[in-house]
Length: 364
Image (cartoon, rainbow, N blue to C red; front, side, top):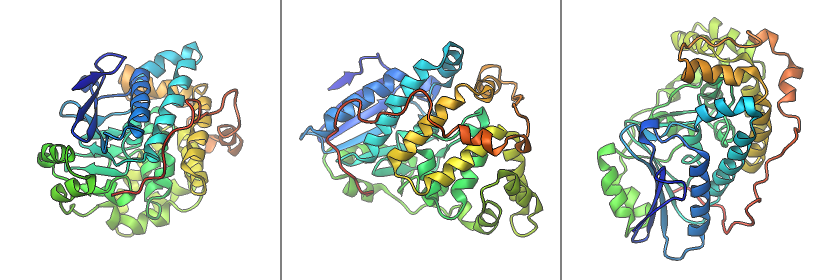
């Protein structure tokens, strides 16, 4: 039986045997998350956590384009001139959902097929069974729109091998399935043609057994072969120095390093510097502490001109020519960055919905 979420058909919940399935159902928007969707998912996950009839939870996306392209940033664009209160509420609920997924007491299987960006990473990569395919294109592209990785993205990227997470966070690069596996954003490679068989197997088999039947050896990761220049160039805590080292690199990977420098310099300078500081701080924090840090930074971004300007340039007007303020990395001073980590008028409350019946879950 399929139960439709209270917010309409944007997210569907279904029970088949021991499997409880979440289907994000906005295919024309690549299943971008709305406030109603995350409220519904959080409520349903909380109920299923204590339901003895549910052995495994699955999240998947409707349509052929991807699991989830992120949050509904057009709604954020429209909310910023009104003060951003709706966005702040949305993030509160979304981050509670991210925290719950990371601590879920049952196998949480995420099919990271197609586009999995921003909020799509949050609803999938904190799970215990994360599946990528040959069609996966994932990443945290927030610096492109004048924002910084959130939904626990800085927690995940800060724990990637060497400085590969720093590279992914600052450039906002789209990563394929093998790169996602290498960075620690996923666990298993399953050909997209095998996904229907995997979902069917999850109805009456353990997640471990079902994935074991369908998983294949992944192709090699390109990032894994680029560690020399990535680790050397991205070391340190100054974004300007990082760009300088990328431009000066003359060893293997010089062309890739130059392209990375071009990419970083095209992003919001404020976003790049806040992202780098967020990644460095996240190395010693728990996920919930990182979510609180990201929430605090996010509220500051709501009052910074680059966030709305980035959405305008990329999504609203689509002219791809954002006018960043300030316009260069050298103009973003340490005190400007520090403000994004200072307490504002509101803090993240992960327990607002009460204690959750969850525990730490290991990856399968």
